[in-house]
Image (spheres, rainbow, N blue to C red):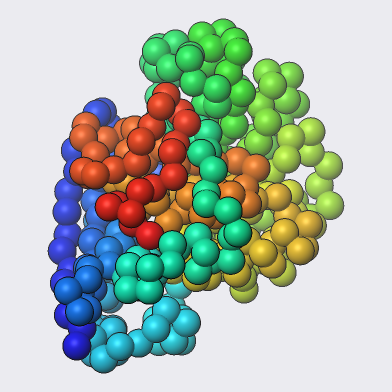
Length: 327
């Protein structure tokens, strides 16, 4: 017999996290634990309803699958009873962890990787703010090899210029979080290219990116909010060079792996991303990081404290998760 437990948790941030459309004071997560035969598998997702008024609570979404989960459903069958999204992610990752522990087979082997995950260098995200504040944050983190800047408002090139001056040796990517207009994109891209920006994420809202078809851009573009799962890919072809794979969007590691392989077969570059969460949310994504050119798994670095045991971060270098955490 199985038993599933579900709980919402709140994790304080070191400082408010600001993107173009919201400000977060805490990391809001939901943890799923599935116990079978004295073994417990764990998964974590973002409590998205904390930021999306009117959305069905994630805990309620998870509870709809309780009968099937406790009856013994596997992760492949789970894909057919729940849609993509955070709720399925928490259950899916808990099932991966449970299977790894019950069988004694590490999750990376279950995922088809012959070698254990290698350490990965993550970006460090700087919240959207004034050029002066973003420059100060960049200066404090100038030892990090890659900085990711949250943008999406007027004056973004000035923000990037301030960061570049404060951290001249850092690689830089930017994320507009759907906040730009077509005119801004056209105006900003040459300026950002001159400042050495290597990647631009999600300039427009999903479904409003027709102008990107065969658009000549000096910087590769990545689909984030527009890329949910494999069904998204057909609409992204010819518009974006990269897709940002987040387990909260795909509904777990099962679909994330399938999405990564299909995206690579279609010529997309891979980025793995995260929402704000603890190391439990980042650990499964370290498997996708093995396939990615850009890694954004810095959620725990933004928290005032992380879950213990957690991932080991040496600056921006993430060591693979140990079995006490996940997988």
